[in-house]
Image (tube, rainbow, N blue to C red; front, top):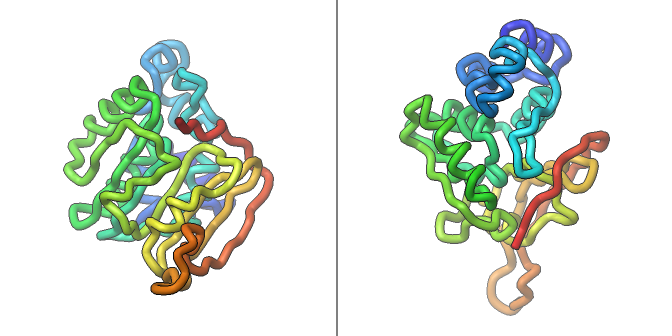
Length: 220
């Protein structure tokens, strides 16, 4: 992926040393169906800057888009991250590489076959800091909350309140909504006491980045 990575660096999509290192260590060709490798070859997959199908109506995302979203997320060593719609496991593995042994990645995938596919792919790298869950990612993962960072790989119609609730103060949420990527930063915790409103999830700073295309988020 050397040529593609250098291109993404030159175009300012890749900036952070931790993320650049993850792109170098985690090979995209390890996360696509075998028939694609037989047909196209590993070098093509590693250098191909576009989505590829992984079955069940889902894709392994375009490297440019993954780089852009990870740079918005700003994952760090020691972070606890919720990875929603883990699919092929490529982004999950890069997050494992970035957060290191002191961090942890909880990966949720609603399609059982893709959960197993992604888990098998990530197992090639022998990470100990990851858990795969088959379930509805739109509900988050309350039993493991709060999270330092939350990222989703499929487009929601609106941002689920569960994700906002399960994010730490100071945490970052990166989520596609229709044809935009949104970055939410949690600036204040919910008001305690009198206000029983379930929509009371705290205060967020929001920024929209339009011009992207994603598969839809599947929920129950």
